[in-house]
Amino acid sequence: MARSLMILSGIINGLAGVLLIFIPEELLLWADGENGKTAVLALSLLGAAMLGFGMMNYMGRNAVYGGIYGKPIILGNLLFHTVAAVHLIKFSMNIHDTLMIYAAVAGALYFIFAAGFIRLNFFPPDLKSSSG
Image (cartoon, one colour):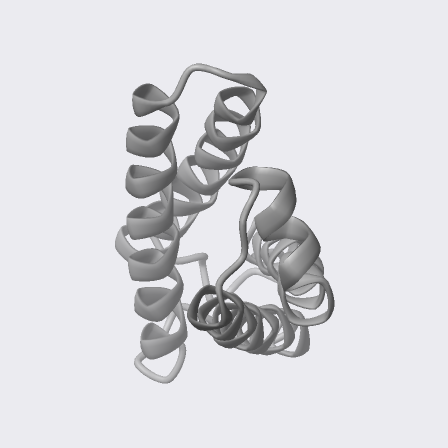
């Protein structure tokens, strides 16, 4: 489970990061209809962080996460995905157009990832078996 969670999280965060890095103006115009220079910079920096999380998760897909060395990666992912899920779901409850559906789906996806990292944190894989 740990390997597939890290791969899926890495791919999703990596794709979101690439989109936010390379087309922040277009995403802002699509979402709000306006794009300020500060918002474009903020989206680009968010994209860089998400791409970093995606690379970290994908490159660490074969690591052992049952010990103390994998704990910082698990907790960093847990915090990121939990905060993202809460904010996306809260955002989707405050708007009433098609963006609400996209925000709710993204929030649900991040909630699933957060639940996976909670499970991985409190119930690490058996280090004696070959599957994780």
